[in-house]
Amino acid sequence: MVLAAAVFWGLSGTAAQVLFQGEGFRPEWLVTVRMGLSGMILVLGTAVFAGPRAALGPLVHLVDALRLTLFGIFGMLGVQYSYFASVAEGNAATATLLQYLAPAMIVLYAAARSRRMPGLRQIAAVGLALAGTFLLVTGGQIQALTVPWTSVVWGLASAVTLAFYTVYPGGLLRRYGAPATVGWAMVVGAAVPALGGALQPGPAVPGETWWIAWGLTAFVVLFGTLVAFLFYLTSLRFLTPAETSLLASAEPLSAVVSAALFLHVNLGMTGAAGAACILAAVVLLARSK
Image 1 (cartoon, rainbow, N blue to C red):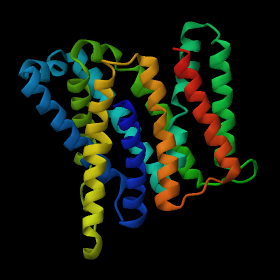
Image 2: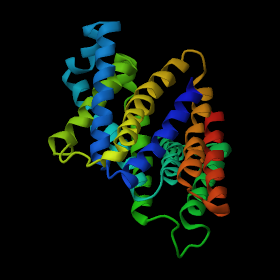
Image 3: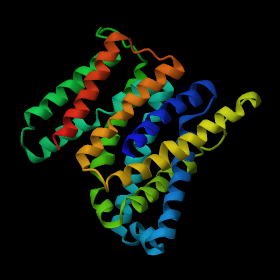
Image 4: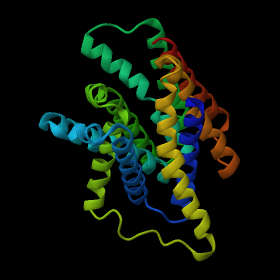
């Protein structure tokens, strides 16, 4: 199940690239719709299967509600918008690989907070992640970028916000469970751009390709968000966290392969070496847990 979730996440990035660069969709519109619909389904599902009290749990206490709001805006909205903005400016493969610098950032954050040096395996993983990023975005030539600098900036922002998304909500998840916590975080995260006018104007989809555009939108919302999340959660019942995170590293591989097959994105030999370094870093960190 976690492998299927990783594949769905990777494919949703490729689908989003088609929507942004081929169908005229805007990242803020897709993020708002994706989070709003998926969040409401998760909250309603929690109310049906676990009861209204479980569904409303994260909103009862003011402090937790404020924490949930921060998580929804800076974690959920932050990571999803920055990732999709990176895809729109560049491509899904590079955006996903840059986002997967988050585990290395978490290692550095944990080391700084505990004032302890990370282990050799973690140091090696951080080194691989940095080397992989350099090769991926420069092609080995420091004076040039292989993708637009705006895509790189948004990709690095998605890694930072993913690290926050991973570290920050631990207490909320333990107290209220993942479906209710993530569901409300999605609703809060979607409300901010919606109130800012992100849904207007809607996509101007050409008549002859409307079924492709809305089919890909449905895939991103349902399979790339809701189903992938539920599969990932379910897998935690049968696998250890280390095994789950290791299998989840198939997401960037899925994004690279699907972008190459469907969009003819070619990273080149140097870019492929950079991608391999980042994947190796993720695997090393997962195995060190």
